[in-house]
Amino acid sequence: MTVNHEGVWNACLKVIKDNIPLQAYKTWFEPILPIKLENHILMIQVPSHFFYEWLEEHYITLLKKVIKKELGAEGRLEYSIVMENRGKNAAPYTVKLPTSDGKSLKNPSINMPLNINERQIRNPFIIPGLKKVNVDSNLNPAYSFENFVEGDCNRLARSAGYAVANKPGGTAFNPLLIYGGVGLGKTHLAHAIGIGIKEQYPNKTVLYVGSEKFAHQFIDAIKNGSTNDFIHFYQMIDVLIIDDVQFFSGKEKTQDVFFHVFNHLHQNGKQIILTSDKPPVDMQGMEQRLLSRFKWGLSADLAAPDLETRIAILEKKMYGNGIELPKEVVEYLAYNINTNIREMEGAWTSLLAQASLNKKAITLDLAKQMIDKFVKNTAREVSIDYIQKVVCDYFDLPLEILKSKTRKREVVQARQISMYFSKKMTKSSLANIGAHCGGKDHATVLHACKTVTNLSETDKQFKIYLSDLEKKLTIQ
Ligand code: ADP
Ligand code: MG
Image (tube, rainbow, N blue to C red):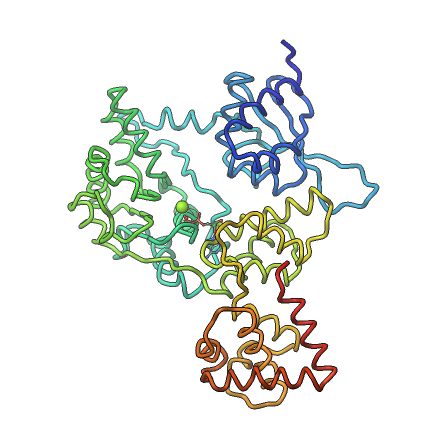
């Protein structure tokens, strides 16, 4: 058996290929090059930094497994990243980054063994009688308040979270339950609160734990006869953050133990932060006594963000990653993926991957193609909002003016053009289009459409405007 980097990596790939969809395999694993194998450390080269992050975020568990399988418990993975945006002739230079669960991004010089998490999972308990233990908070520094964009969709939850971060256990928001649909920022906000507390109260023991992990630890504890240690461990936490508590539904024993932990913490003025995909009233399979405790504090929801918030979030993410996308591309993504922030991020990450792999510039066209490929079930029709935005940009007018009652000639014209395209390109009713354009009625919209058609037949310049805009709006 050859134990060289290629042999090992090929063996890893075999397993990986069997475990993920082909398209994902092609996109994320085929471009990887094995570089070397030394002292149980396999170094692989990835095309870019976000590529590395993507792997870490989505495939870390799988990678850990295959590396362990091929290289044993001591096995580690190191990434060598081809730096982007360098001069054509510059030789690609590489940096080493440790594999972890993404938390050590800020600290690339520390080499973390791949199995660090497993070790923590296996032995999370204190020795009874020992007071101060070092608990890894499991907080992801990227999910800070600073990186959390505020908007109408999250105002209550965010400010409650902020209050809790400033005074853990000392507000009426205990427990703080954050609920909302998939990909709307529950996990991010939960981490932000934990990070905020750690910054101000470094001596407090903060612990973020996913509800599944909590449940699995508990099952392990039962098997090992160490449920007391388990309970003690959780009872000495100052700030307990449990993500996705809906997972406890139907798990009576887990709910039971959580109930005891909850009571102990709450009675001692410790802070509890929970997240869930639904409000307490809709949680099926959850014990009444637990539900009633969830309602003791504050339940705050996260709603789907509006357009401006989505754009701001994308911009923040790009800035954080040191990446710049053309403004029109950002807007296009934000307009077209409007329910789930994670999906929006997925689309732009894929876009960046695609661009870097094929050495293509990131253009609106590329973005349009990517959206088709990577985002399933996205409504493909352009929206009235999008049309208005494109028209406003084209004529260099602020969106508010277009939606206002102004009768200024150039505004009226832009407004009529957006109505015209909305009629032509969306399935919206005339009344709905009117409502989007500053509360006009259906007759006004109809009139606008006629005016635009007439003008385009008589006015050459106007016709050019229309065809320019039509090109911008058409999805290939
Ligand atoms: P959930 O836990 O609700 O499914 P996440 O917290 O995992 O959602 O959020 C999904 C992604 O969207 C994360 O990358 C997160 O950073 C990002 N995100 C969500 N809301 C915001 C926000 N208000 N500002 C910045 N990023 C956000
Ligand atoms: Mg989450």
